[in-house]
Image 1: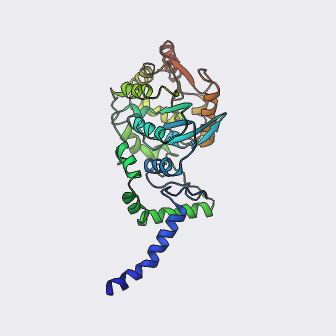
Image 2: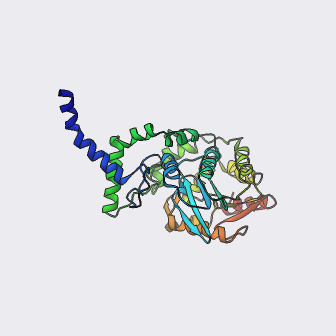
Image 3: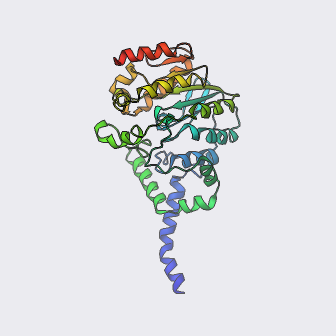
Length: 327
């Protein structure tokens, strides 16, 4: 009896926790349409895997990449509904498993597979503050209801439900990117972040093979590869850390992966204008979506903000960048 009495004291709290988490649904398990769970505080990889598993989004094109891609959100372009599977610190080695998983849950064949590539993604080094699981483990956990139930009834889940409710009711939206990585509005405050990534940079000699394997496994879709832009002050860090030769190798190696790709990581009006940037590492979502839409509407063409790079023009293109940087 004493045990039952003790348990009964916690029952109201458990029911409140269960009810709030069920309604807000921060884990995206119940396909809620209220929009109260837009702000994601859990691991984005798990959340986006849950969305595929339990919300069954309808799309015919896929965009995958890091947080620089994530900030764009889902969007439409002409006849294409683009699902965004961008996650903080997602590396090319992670892409294949998630692409296969997403395709297995999609009723439609993909029109476009858009692959966003970051310079830091060409390194063997992974961000040391992140404890990411293997892709297969996210897929396994998303299908494991015991694992999900433990998360669902956890205090953290309730805390995130309350944060989502507060953000929605106060009309404040937490930036999903900044829930994953450091805010970089002031570059000087983030020396540790850049020391971590660029200070330990080591070119991944398997990089080309990883990307070729992705392309060979997805011949049913039109593949578009693009490099993600960074603000000019971030680009300067490549020079500061003496990585320009690696940057050139990266852009050159990409011509061995595909017939051509779109390079946004350059000195352009896009990267020079502070108004385009949420921080030194991420475009605003509005500017980013316009960028991708323009790319899809003007395939294989150059603009002021990006260059379509092929094997026969990469050498001249890199020489032009050196001239702009006065190297």
